[in-house]
Length: 362
Ligand SMILES: *Cc1c(COP(=O)(O)O)cnc(C)c1O
Image 1 (cartoon, protein in one colour):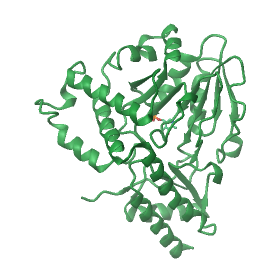
Image 2: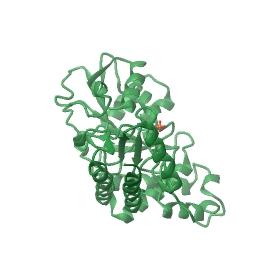
Image 3: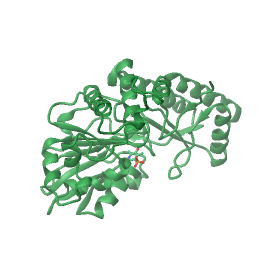
Image 4: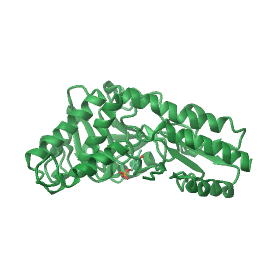
């Protein structure tokens, strides 16, 4: 087998063990004479698989009582619209922290639905640094505060959740969910498209506190767009993306075997530590994009002296077996996305390549 060092931003690397197990069970699941993909979503095996996945996620995240785990479709981008539809009630304002292009998209989408306000923005700094978010939730009319915890494209991250007081904090954790312990007392709602840290594309996890479900239930919006509908039907109101949920379950089991979120946090620090040290020790050959204090432990972004050199880096890296290192088109440069399933040795190999490339081109 010739697997590449996969630094894709999303969809992204999955643990090999997970792919092997999915392959094994693809044609016949649990001795039941058919694939899980061929079973009714109303059948016991599918129901059980969904329940076990919810439970695993709750255990890994240390989820307290009073929250529901939902499995939805449409990706994180659909949540950008569903959040204001479900929670932005009459006379209220949806407050947004703008810290990167995904948070900006969430904000723009909400503005088509109701009254919104940007309460902090890093746009003027080209998203290289996180905006100051002291005094969150001070506005009396705030329906919620929306925050993107990890800015996938720019490579910055809020390492700790802010305190929004009585205002529900809503977090887009698409690119750093399951990478660290969470303080649930601060969170009203969180969501993540699975294709970065959790599994394959197709399923989006939403975790919602009961008081917000009540708000959702009372809204006059289509049934299929209500979180309350998913909650009261165990995410089986309509056909869920069964196969994606199943592969996510395998990823969660793998995460547990590895030592859970504490171990994921330790590995993330080790992986990105290697990369940031190499950037910082390069004497300006590699130039970190994100402000040092705000650096992400998931997506490492950097530039080089000129674009020609950056393109050569990407080309040569590809030949050496590294995939996905070109930066997002809005930032340029390079980006290494090192999610949970990326082994530390892939980052060791990458820093070897970076040092060698500098020796040859510096
Ligand atoms: C990738 C990403 C999204 C978009 O996810 P889709 O599932 O493609 O809609 C949104 N927010 C963040 C933080 C992301 O990293």
